[in-house]
Image 1: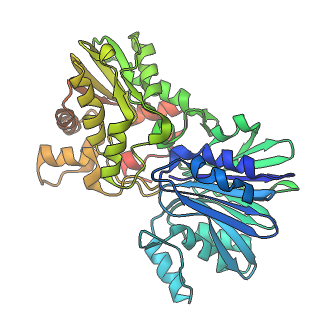
Image 2: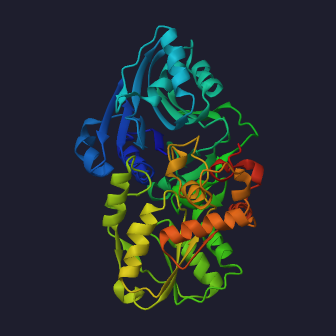
Image 3: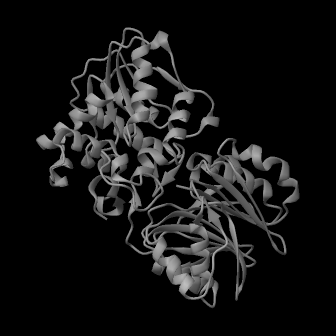
Length: 463
């Protein structure tokens, strides 16, 4: 994931742009950038792998001036990029994953274009989007070209002299929300960026919707489609607790997930705890429904360590998880504990950096409760899991059943004995007393949207 923020103001927008972008720091750990328009485009990009967004950009803010700007916290590619085209220069930020990137690159090169932006030796996916826009005779035709050609997902902001074009992915897999203040319009991936900056939510863009924000206000360019497939993982893990998508609160959904996990659970425990930060609300919901005290057995040391899920390498992910979580021995010792988390992706962090810390502090029993079903398929729409072998569920299937080719449908149904054997294998690998996942059906119910409006690909393998 990456987090996008844009603002158009009747006065200098730089301070609002700075803080609005910073409120997306939970979505990326690699690169961050700002671009403003003040008679011409001005851009800055920094590496944030070892430091926070604010510390990288604070000192140079005075050099930025403009009434319009865009910002990004990126999980991979350096951005914003600036593109020169037949209809003028524009800056661009993007959130998504180009599943057909190689094909698009080949087509663009065959038309005589070249690429200048490289990230870790690869062509920058954001520049691919920029080249697709620049192929056409006008900005709107270029945006439509992106929506037509990209397989995967792409939500993006385009900063031009006319204003900021905000474009949501054609299936709405990632969100964009418009906020309004006196004389100021903003667009954000996360609505949590608005309250402290004085914005009220004006509207959420629909799938494939295009709007232009400028000094004249909000102009609707293209109406949304009714083919929404918003990522369900936003509510379970990725999104910030204070954000809202499709009118549904992230925090409220997580509490409902925890309550679902407590249904018919026969475990007798002394306390419920959550893996900080995203597991906390799930644990609160479980504790309330089960009538078991919620206590903090693990605490996170400062937000500066970020999320252990987003860095690209396993070594960095493990390091972040190890350093940020501190156990409280006085809470844990001699206790039977239910520990809630959002998901088990690879499983190594939960085992090595949470569960083992609780055992070392003298836990009597540990029972793991996970707010989403076993992740079975690498994500095709956002930059997260990339291969089957990364997934704990796939490794457990191989360990439990060997190299036999078995129908994956058997492992998607929590009532199936093969599903249960897979979960038992994961439980044994984690080294805990019991393990239970929320079902797909209960997760959908907790979110509160119809199944057909949710992207459940990570769990079902179906679009």
